[in-house]
Image 1 (cartoon, rainbow, N blue to C red):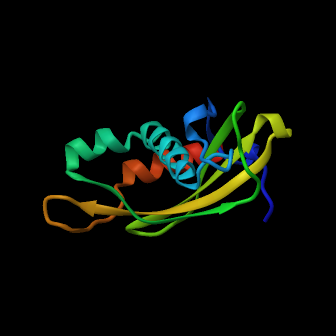
Image 2 (cartoon, helix red, strand yellow; image 1 turned 60 degrees about the vertical axis):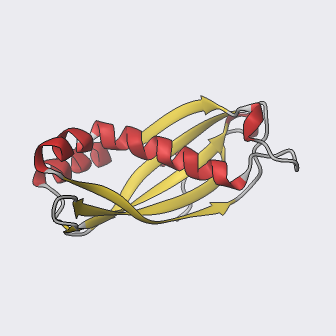
Image 3 (cartoon, rainbow, N blue to C red; image 1 turned 45 degrees about the vertical axis):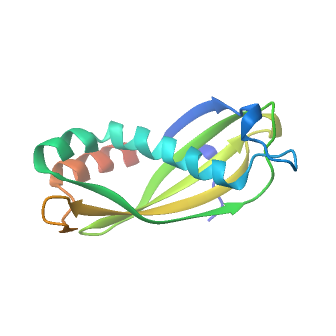
Length: 143
């Protein structure tokens, strides 16, 4: 399914920094994972994951991540970074990401995903996603 940045219910905007470019004059590949992390943490804030984690001592841990580069980004540009959860299981969810370039008519520059597993940090084992978190995720997905 081909998506646009508007298909992602949680979005943030930021400028491309000069220092994010590499010697090939485009944003270095590793920087995209920072972009994904930034929107993931904003998403977590919207669903109150960190607050719930403080109370229950269970929370998310990134199990795997990947990125597909579509077109290069370079300075100066403003980007929109989006996140959506497309698949939820008892103890994990798949978050998909996109990075769109304002200077390129909001076309996607990269897409990626992160598998987030719920983890009991006290017991050092996987845990079920709390109902409170699931409820908040469903509310965001409908917005």
